[in-house]
Amino acid sequence: MTTGQTLITILALALLSLAVLNINRGLSSHDISLAQNRYRLEALSIATSYIEQATQYYFDEAVADTNNTAKTDPNTFSSTLGLDPDDSTMFGTIEIDDFDDYNSITKIDTGKSGVIYRVSFKVEYVNLSGDKVVPVSNKTFHKRMTVFVTDTYDPPLIYRETALGKVRDTIKISFVYSYWFYN
Image (cartoon, rainbow, N blue to C red):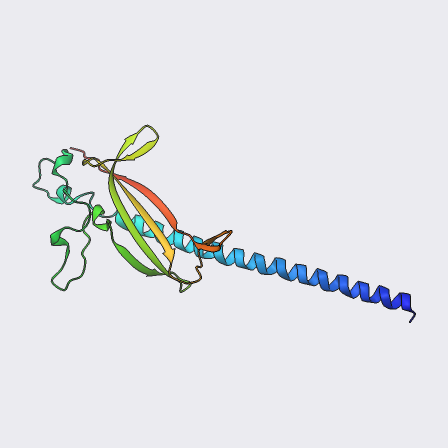
């Protein structure tokens, strides 16, 4: 083998090594992206399931009372959003019985992948004004639940890249639940 053939062989091996490294880097980055999307999708699924669960409850405790004839008056709705004093059992467990009982609750949930998620809720009265949903301090026939889902790991599994590195990200879903009364 001559010197020219040796140099060409070394150059070909160097190019092959460079190509293999780039393919490996590409596959690794693709794998990380797939894993992160899997965790985001799982967090989104958990948030959606809690919203579906919340909609099975009464809009407010006042509308659950069959003797209440003022169901069409929002002033009869609960004065506070969140758990009422009668929402605890004698064993100290929380008993959710209406939509706004989710306000300010934080739950820990485990997805099918085994990842532990922190799920937080915020419920507020809102007005529907055109295409806008505006929070208000008075009672209305509309409540908005916002569900926040994050993972509990360090470094985070649900994150966004910034100049400082990985920053924990939160999946946030809002849902408006309205009360309709029919005679």
